[in-house]
Length: 341
Image 1: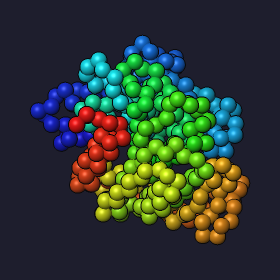
Image 2: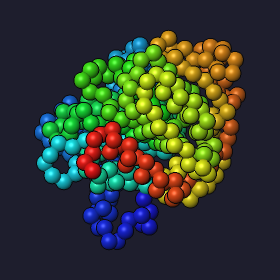
Image 3: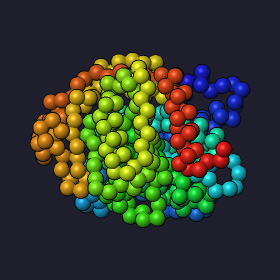
Image 4: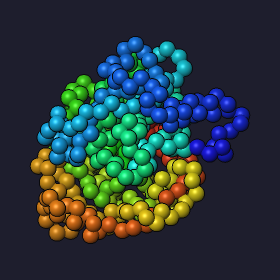
């Protein structure tokens, strides 16, 4: 977050953000990396926990145990007091944990009385920049592991844990509504109470016969050329048909990463699947083009997405869209997590 968003009249907020940033940017070896299986001791701060790195949904759904194990980390912050509180897990975009996005939202939620768990899916895996990033399904594995872990904390109400994701994290937030995805984590008594997706990529929509029916809020940029709004509107309609309460809000003129602090700029080398359109059936593990209905497998998958990808996208903040998103999310969480008025 830039200094213009850290008012001098609020030093506590600035210090809290500085601590969170410090924890996430320090080399991971600076902390004890032994993963914990329970938070029953009531700890907070930087926490390592077990997850896995699936190559994609095929491995995650069929042979999850064969995916490489990894200890990932997150920063847990609890609001003041001793009462049990709702919590929200935040999962980042392809740019990694951002101070003006993930950490800024965590600060806002703490002020609302929520515990926050900012998950870093890249640092512990040694991912730097956009090269060698794991499938977004690794983020799916991480947030479900985080869900199970948070439910063991004595101050967190395990029935009121929400999930919020940005871009690739937004896609993870949406697919976490699908029962076959949730079932892999074997969390029969723990499921996300609400799902918030900011500018998710919906050019490939993941479908299944069953959903958890966890409420969804999608916030989209009307001028997003990285993750266009139209496929997400169709995805929202599909979820609605499956009995999921869905709210889709589109901000006219807003670009990708509209809730950040950076000015809008062109990333000339970035590749976007903006003109691709496909659906992946979780139950049958089949990927189909929606224009022809043809099933894709093996090298056909990469060939198709290479053929419809475009280069050059615009990203950057939109103060009006960000302010509107803050209000929309506050209303959504107040309703779904039963926050005090």
